[in-house]
Length: 363
Image (cartoon, rainbow, N blue to C red; front, side, top):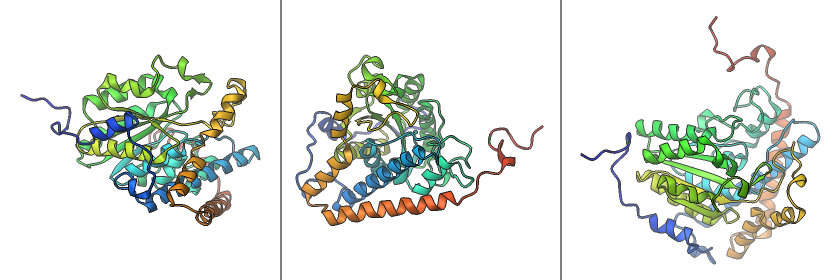
């Protein structure tokens, strides 16, 4: 008698394995014309990805300005990660989904439907914060109506939550995909092993996205793991592990789309190892100059995904100066308006300080 994992469909042939192999071998070249785009992508999609990357960068930079001005307490940035987040989210948002973000997930959360005001109000800790009503520390993004699930400060706990979420969605026959985001430091935790192991055993429709910037706060990759790439760890769980250049959103999208198709076909989870530059310190409380050589800091700027992607769009004939200026001006105006609105919102009432901390209605 054949035995299948909990709630899992029988194994199927997965045509996208060839796509995975091509991406992994570097045989998925960057398009030189709009006719060479991956299946499902159009010029409008390319501009939508660019627009979300610009929105995220504009918002992120403004958060740093607000923090340095003393108007918000803390920032943990996603600058340099925008291509990885937007491209993967763009592939996932086209199907029913659940999202378990991490603290750098500004760009991904914008793609999945959160607004700049939602992001800002969590940093201001105002009563209208959809993530926690102003109770959580900043960067713990969630919105129940968008299936963006709450996260915590402990590194990597969202990975096990994602596996459980994917199992629940399967048992409910949702036909959905669960995606979770984390940094390379998270792969050194027990939660990483537990989450990927469980998802692989039960062939869960789950996409694990490691935004690999090479640093776990101040610990470099070679002191985190004995392998050369996070993608190599996927072999232990018999799932595909793909290393992708996060400065190339079109390639990231192709990898994420293949992973989504694989999940929906019942073939199980995928680990994406998306190489990104961390363009800021770990957080607004960190001084990376104390542990990163100046020459590496300079090299990071050369891998900024936003100008790289913008240049690619211009080469493809998908973007010109006028359109780029319109997108950037619109992002600045949207952020300005959101800040004005958020700063007019009230603080949480003092009597609600213990709400969602202790069970209510008990003695």
